[in-house]
Image 1 (tube, rainbow, N blue to C red):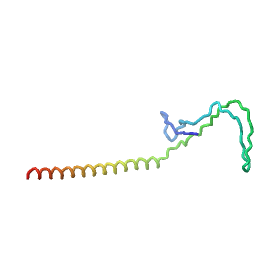
Image 2: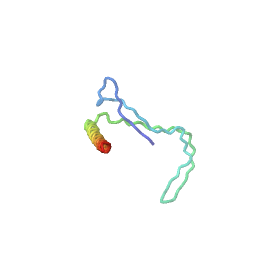
Image 3: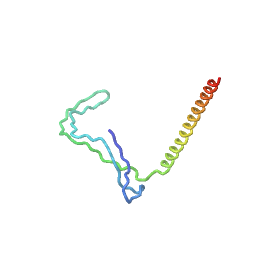
Length: 114
């Protein structure tokens, strides 16, 4: 089953003291139990059961209310470093393409002058 919780911000309350959160989970509505099967040393026993449909909804567990500042700082540094590397790679590729096109144009001009 899927389960997710996360702290949620609230106006006027700092994030490390937040007491609100969002949550999402899978619930089973009108769950019917028809039979129970038990295994004992390879021997299966099936017991028929009569049960009214029930709703299965588990309690939510609140997420930690403190913000892990170190993880946030490391994430921001990783994103900035990744952007710097991406810009360097893109600028190197652009310079290489321009140099290649310039060399082609020079060859065409020399060929035209002959």
